[in-house]
Length: 371
Ligand code: UDP
Image (cartoon, rainbow, N blue to C red; front, side, top):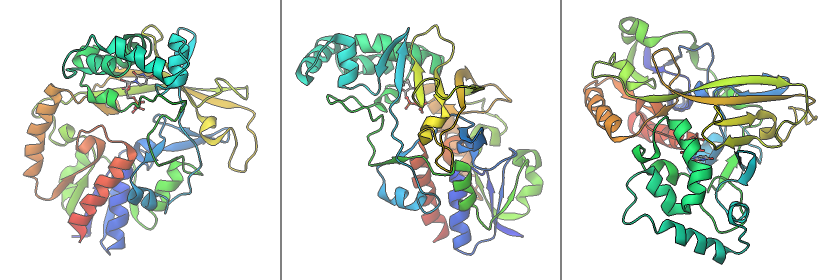
């Protein structure tokens, strides 16, 4: 066979694997059905601004090994994510911290804030059973109603009582004046853009774009000893057990002839009525400067609309509730029987992975597979 590995999908998982396999002297081919590499971290330059075409990607990790790994391919800037929530024109700091509590309740000390939360969380007795109970038990009903409920129901298209608690555990709660969204030791945006970073990862590796593996599976299966498949696991099996649910996102991009639209990279619209979930103003990921450090006269914004995935849409977020969890398990059993195929990444493993976790998972797999 011509190749040792065929990597299906040129996103982060595929790029890490391809890079490592090449280092080990393997013959690798990477294909992707899209016309570009980098999967959903793909960025494109518009008006001098690196626009995150598939939604905001802010790299953050506590994993030193992952940080050392990824910084081989790009230098990172010092961007720190501090989103603002807009609830019917009231602005609140995210994640939930002393600025948020002060605005919400007028409290000025951590003790007062803790007391407010304590009073409000009492309505939840026992272990939180769903996202609503988890949110109230973390920050109380007021914050739940204004900053979580509407946003979450738009984002997931489901009632907060029907969603798993873990989704909201992603968000930190702090009794300090710290607006850093992530509890991460390392954070930033690759200077020069994500696409360039992935280009470096794929340096010297054969890549074919606009190639749909599932369309030509029989042909592709004859050219490589093994396949690393990073597409959707249910699609691989032609949805034979039914389809897993995903959330998709639609982006409405606009170039505005003004230098500053919202003064921040991310503003979340946390009410139920505003149809979009958030607006990203991409230039603020790079402090309003172009690659040469010059101020940019224009700005590019993206409104994000969340929707239920249907065939033909891009899948973004797996819906990790019980029903889908059980279906995934059934697909996973089928996958285990495909001895020449490794399933990986957010879609291949149907898992709400952050970028760093994808890289860590890919590196773990490389250790097993390539040693
Ligand atoms: N969330 C919320 N209000 C916000 C931001 C997030 O209620 O203003 C909830 C929502 O349920 C979301 C989850 O927290 O799905 C995780 O948010 P995160 O920003 O981590 O999601 P991502 O950036 O991956 O879309």
